[in-house]
Length: 434
Ligand SMILES: Cc1ncc(COP(=O)(O)O)c(C=O)c1O
Image 1 (spheres, helix red, strand yellow):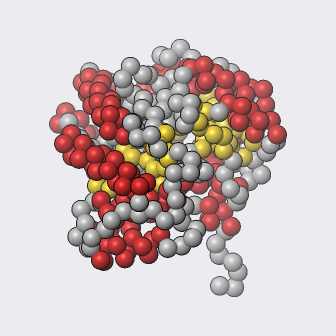
Image 2 (cartoon, helix red, strand yellow):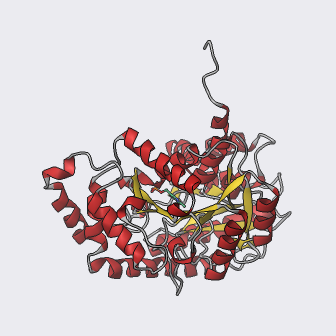
């Protein structure tokens, strides 16, 4: 090429959640059955969408209007419905003009960071959902800036770490909160959220709150949303239907802008995001039309509660199986459908392995771990995949120095769930003793 084509920020883009699939597929070719614990897609884990929801969506498909473009910010009636839902929380008040639809939150996330000045930074959690950390890092062409979530304190944000990083890095303009959190499955108490707002207020920052799992909480928990605790600080809530309908294939999510009138700079930023979507024309329309119909159906809250109870039960079952291994830091989850399980410091060693009978599979596993640069948790994860077919994601891929792995709480078949996690426990013990 006569000029460099690829921009420098591209090296920050990585998505191990899907990268590991390539390895798993190689094993499938060799006849290994794979248990997919890598991705938060309930549909892939035997989840069945209820008939009433399918009927609602089918009826929308009978309307000719469904097939046209929508307003570039999203279907007005749906934005109106969502604004009213937010206003009912009695916190920040918005109108439909403060809502902007995207093709899934993935689209919202990559667009949002793209329009932040490259010298300005958003600090996010570590471990972090990599779509955020990769997109933020790519926009700045530098490694992500993170605050610690503490596995020794219920995975709550380390507020001293956050405060100091914000105080001593004037490039930081925003703080990202993911609540309920991916990958830790934690839900934050109101007091912690209010202290984060206080930091934002003190240093004149805006907040981003990813609330894609807001309706997925269980065992007595509920997630506070940004609109409820933000006060007058500028903020953006990110919401979607991938996890609560659940309809990840709809590629539908939206952002809500809060207090944009308080800060002209922030308002201009929100306007730029709206203009970016206008250039693109609009986002997927069918799911937008379905949102008010599904969410206002009296069957929805009953259905969601029942699903949450099922996830809560799985959370308890996994705690019973894995929660007693002394070499692990294990926190019982409260929301979303993941758990980040961390190895205690020093227990992972570069010689450890799992027995693999089949020559082809063993050789493949050995080729994945032969590089000295392979982190110790990746090494464990690759052996686990090859020996037991259990496909999890290493925590070091979530922008973290901790060593561990993320599992999901999605397996609908209880016997299979028990089988997978009992096998996982045996694998951990065998690996650590090898
Ligand atoms: C925290 C978080 N935000 C956003 C997304 C992306 O959601 P969407 O399917 O709407 O792109 C995910 C998907 O797993 C997620 O875990």
